[in-house]
Each structure stands twice: as C-alpha cells, then as structure tokens.
Length: 309
Image (tube, rainbow, N blue to C red):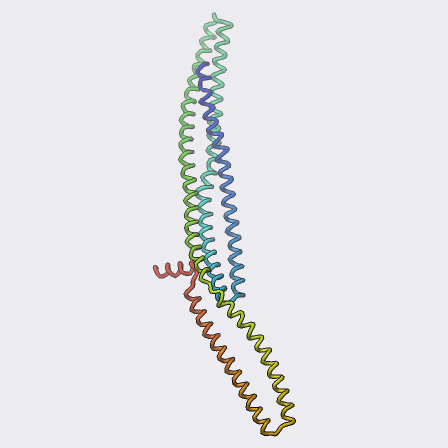
C-alpha cells in the first residue's frame, strides 16, 4: 500500500507533462497556422498593390512611371519570397506541431492503462487485507488472495517501468522537436526578411534617384503649350482684322509690305515651334537613356542569372 501511494507524485508529474504538452503545443499549432494564413493574406494584398502600381504608372510621366514600375517589379519579387516563406512554415512548423495531436493521444491512452493496472493492484491488496482481518484462519482463501495480489503488483510494476520509459522518451522527443520547430521558424523568417531587405534597399535607392523636376518640367511645358496656342490664335485673329482694316485705307504697296511682315512673323513662329519640338525630342531621348540605366532589382537579378547560365 505504501508503495502505491509513494508513486502518486511521480504519476502526477507524468500526467502534467502530457496535459501541458497537449494544451500548449495545441495552442502553438493553432497560432502558427493562423500566422501562416495571415501571411498568405498579406501576400494577396501585396499582389493587388502591384497591379494598382502598374496601372497608375501608365498614367504618369517618364520619371514617376519608371520608378513605379520598378517598385511594382520589386514588390512582386518580395511576394515570391513570401510564398516560399508560407510553404516552409507549413512544412517545417505547422505540420510537425499537428503531429503532436496523435502523439499526445497515445500517451494519454498509456496513462489510462497504467491507472487501470494500479487500481487493480489496489483492489487486490484491499481484498487481501480484508480477508486477513475477517478470517485469519482461512489459509486457503488468504493464500489465493495473496497470489492474486502478487500478480496485480507484478503487472503494475511492469506497467510502471513501461510508462516511465514511454514518458521519458516522450519528453526527450518533445524537447528535440520544440527546439527544431522554433529553430526552423526563426530560420524561415530570417531568410525571408534578409531577402526582402536586400530587394527593398535597392528599391529605396531607385526611388531616391527619381528626378521630380524632369516630370514637373514636362507637365509645365504641356500647360504652356496649350496657353501659347490660345495666345497665337488670338494674335493671328487680331492681326488679320487689323490688316484688313488697314488695307481698305492704304495703298497697294503698303498692303504688300504688311503681307511680307505678316509672313515673316508666321515663319519666325514656325521656327520657334520647330525648335521647341527638337528640344522635346532631345529630352525624350535623354529620359529614355535614364530609364534604361535605372532598373528594378528583379530585372537586374534575372539579367545576372541569365548571364551566369
């Protein structure tokens, strides 16, 4: 009897070990599965942002268009890394934690079998004590009860040794698995963030190199072109009206000189417009060259790997 009660504290420790593993590893599994799902949702939102950046860039001038397209390409590349992060978390973190549901169930069944053997031992010992008190002279019944009690004790001792080995192996596996699972978790996160930092560093420098004044100059030039067109039309109309009124009260020679002056003005205006168009073409060429030198990290990555092949 004393042996049975002396093992209660050890059994309590075993039961707590299994119950704590069931509780906390189950919570870890649930939380990390949710973490993985939310990471997948973040990837989906970033993909939508990439599409919006590309659509918006098509409406802007060269400098902003180049920077936004490069940003979209780099952001899409980061989402490829995020997808790899999701797959690794699922395989190396969530799946091993899920396996503990079945492991804990088996250990709980082992504890129940042990408790059943221990209760049987206790009943046989209580039966023996009762016979000894009531019929101390009935040696045959007492001997049979002693045999049954000894069998129960031997069976319980064997179950105890097996349970100790089982729980000890369980604890060892749990420690090793928790160490590996969270090492893998940290490694997966470090790899993703290191790759993302490398891409975003290049992206930041790309955005920093954007020349706002170039786009602003083009925009201002378009506004000025429209205003000068209206001014030219007003000037042309007033000039024609003035020449018509003058020709009615002047000589033919004066009219001819006015016509020459008017044609000269038109030719000068045409030359000014042609010079402006040439300047714009030169600016477009320089912008094209600048765009070619500024590339996204994703484009450079693909080009470098193609050269290696």
